[in-house]
Length: 486
Image 1 (tube, rainbow, N blue to C red):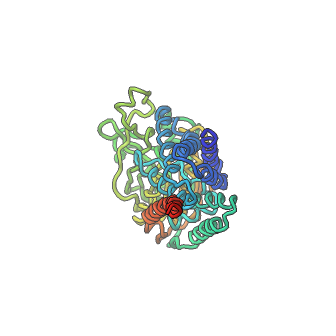
Image 2: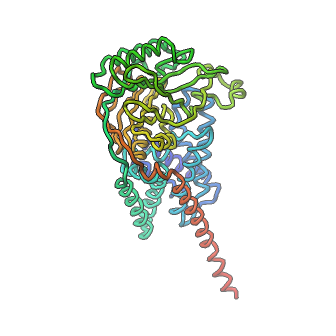
Image 3: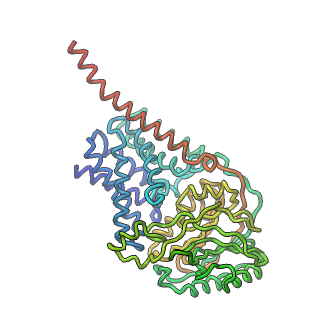
C-alpha cells in the first residue's frame, strides 16, 4: 500500500508541475497515467491511499498561497480538497473499464470542487494545467470540465499504450485529438468594433497586505502611473482595491479626483473601490466613470475569497487562530456582471472571480464585449498566485471568445486574446502601463451557451456505464463455474 500511495503522491506532484507558474502541461497527462496505473486491480483501501496521495501532492503545494491569509485555514482546506480528490480513485472502477471511468470521475470531482465548499475554490484544477497546451482549446466547446476529462482520457490512453492494448489506446488518442480540433474550430463570436485600452499598474513592494499598506500611497501611485496613458485611449482600467474610502464613494474627494481624471483623458475609467458597509463589513466593487467625468455603473464582487475576504465559521475559528489579517467580511454582490460604458459593454470578474467559469459566462451572456479583471495579488510574495490568476484569465478568454484585460497593483497585469494568448504582460512590482488596441466582440461559444450541464451529464452516464460493465465482467467467471458444476 505504501508503494501505491507513493505513486499517488508522484501523480499529484506531476499535476502540480503542470500548473502555473511551472506550466509543464504534458506532465499532467503523465500524472493521470500514473494515477490510472496505481489504482489498477486494487481493493478500495489501496485506491483510497492512492487518491489521498494524489490529493496531497496536488493541493498542499497548489494551495500554498492560502497560508498568507490563514495557516490553519490553509491546512484544513487543503486536507478537505485532498479528500475530495481521493474520492476520484474510489469512484473509478479498478478493472479494465477504468479507462472509461477515470475521465468521468475526474470531471465529476472537478465539478464538485468548483462548487463546494464555500462556493468552490477552483484554483488548483486540471484545466489550469493545460492553459499552455493544445487541450485548452477544447474549453471553447465544453469548458474546463471537458479539458479535465481529456486529461483523464489522455492518461488512460497512455496507460493502454504502455500495456499494448491496441483498441483502447487509439480510441483514447482519437477522442483527445477530435475534441481539441473541434474546440479550436467552433465559433467564438465576431468583432463588432475596437477600443484602445490602458491597463494601469502602480507598482510597489510585493508581499504587503492591505491592512499594512497606506491606501493613499497606493492610490497616488496609480494616479501618477495614469499620466503615462496616451491621448486617444478609450478605456483605462485600474486594479482592485486601489481606491479605499470610509464612506460611500459618491461625493467623496477621491470620486471628484477620479471624475477629473476621466474627463482630462476623455476616457472611460474603471477602478476597483473598497468602502465600508453596515455591520463591520466592506463592499468590494468596480466603479466606472464616463468620458466627461460622470459616475457610471458599478459591479459588486459576487465570489469572495474564503479566509481572504471573509472567514467561514468566524465565531469558531477566532478561538483557534489570529484573524487580524481579515478583520472584516466582504458583502456578497448581486446583479449582472456587466458595466454599460462609452467604451462598450464590459463584462467584469473581480480578482478571485476570474477562477470561476460561471462568473465569466454570466458576464458574457449578459452582453459583455470585453472581460475586464481588476485584481489585487500584491499580498502574495511569490509568483504563484499571480501566475495562477493569469492562467485562469487565459482559460476564460478561450471559453468565452473575448479579450480579457487584467490590471493588478503590482502584477501581473496582462491582455489576453480570445485564443488564450498573452499579448502583453507586466513585470511584477514595476510601475507600468500596458496600452493596446483590442476588439469588442459579440456572439457566443458553445460553452457560454450550454454551460457545464451537458459535460457533467455525459460524465455521470459514462461513470455509471463503467461500473455496470465492470460488474458484468466480475459475474462472468461465476456464470462459467456454475455451467461446469452442472
